[in-house]
Amino acid sequence: HWYDDFVGIVMHPDSAVARRQVTDAAGIVHHYEEVLAGEAMQHGPVMLSWPAVQQAGTGGAGGTSVVIHEFVHKMDMQGGGADGAPPLPRGFMGARGPREAARHWQRTWAPAYQHFREQVAMAERFGAPMPWLDAYGATAPQEFFAVACEAHFVQPERFAEEFPQLSAALRAFFRQDG
Image 1 (cartoon, rainbow, N blue to C red):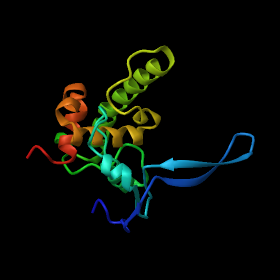
Image 2 (cartoon, helix red, strand yellow; image 1 turned 135 degrees about the vertical axis):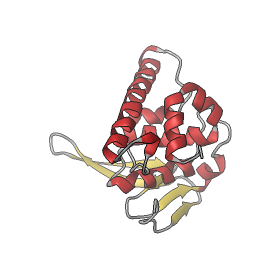
Image 3 (cartoon, one colour; image 1 turned 60 degrees about the vertical axis):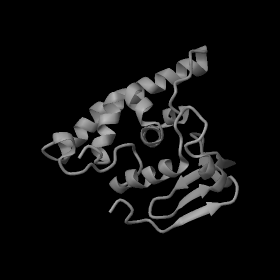
C-alpha cells in the first residue's frame, strides 16, 4: 500500500534539470533551473539520475542513497504530502492509536531535526565541524526524514550510534525488530 499511487520510474542518463518558478512576497515570478539527482512526485513517478543511482551507498560519509531517499518520500506522501511524518503502522512503538503514535513520532523527530539544523548552521556560519549526516536534511522536516532513512539503511551502525532514538523509531517503522 505504500506505493499505491506509484506510476513508474523515470531514469535519466545524466543529472536531470528541472525548470522551476517561484513567486516572491512582492508577487514577482522568478524562473530558475534546478539540477536534480532524483525527485518523487505525489501521484506520479519517481525520477532518478543514473549517475546518482550508481553512486548510492558508496563513498560519502553521510550514508546516502538517492533511491532510498526518493522512495521514502513516496512513503511520506501517503499521509497527504511529504512532511516528514508518514502514516504509522498500527501499534507503532506500543501506541494505542494513530494519534498517540503521531505524538510519539513528533516528540522523537522534532527535537532531533531542530538539533541537526543547529549543527548545520553552526558549521556553515561559524566553521564548526559539519555533521556526518547529509546537510541537505536540514532544509525541511521531509528532507530530514528521507536523509535519516538513507543513513539508517546505508550505514545503520553509525546512524544508530549517533541517532539512537531515531534508529529505534525507524526500526519500528520499517518493522525490522520482529
